Length: 322
Image 1: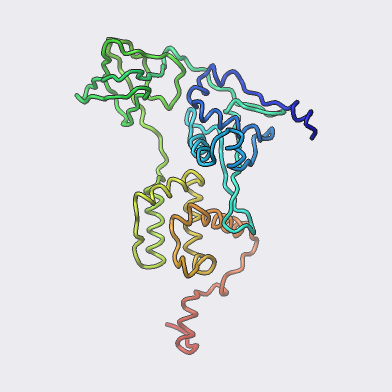
Image 2: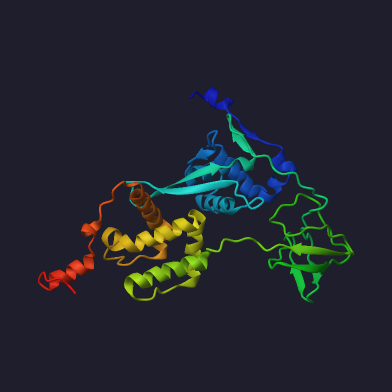
């Protein structure tokens, strides 16, 4: 493609991104990251720029680009992602993997003949955002005092109805509302408003469940307990949840403990770890599981016989065990 034709290309960003509050919720860093990734996409929203390419176009370091990308991937608008990432293992490249992105139609960004998903109409007068611009104290019916710093949103996570009283001079902003902002009624200065706080919907399979499932399979395979380092392993489990679904993580862990000794075991790494799963082993195990699933007539290892029983039989001079 000639330079002239390249300059004729453009990306469509729809007004609803701004008028309905998506851009404000994204913030400048995530919005810039979204547009940078979208500059590589086709009309279906698919693209695969490297982290270095994204950092170069944004004018930031690779480490900063990684942080921005992670924040964008975990961002939710009305409980929906606006971009998805799939990491795939590259055959013949060792532990290397490549990120494949899909910019979803709800992002309000499109190229060529690509389409977008219309954003729902929201009554901002009934559902405002309540940023606390100055350091304030909010008196809660339970008798506790919430001290919020400048710029923070009021976020109460337990599902119950609270009476919140604002002090005189608390300024409220009647901007766009979405499900990430947990309030339903306008809070006016000097008045008492009833605010229903909805419980955040989180997947039941979280970081602790990932560690628990890994430890369970570790115990079943090696008959010893897995030594958990919570500060380290929680971060590794969160990384896995960012890259894979809950079902994929279970499949990965199952495949790893079934095939580690025959496929990946080395003297330096005699047993699997969460660090391996989060870095390179997860993609390889998932790829192996998908290959086995697509095989029409899978060949059973060792003729379907237990290798440990076979070894024991050899030790006993070929006599059958049991």
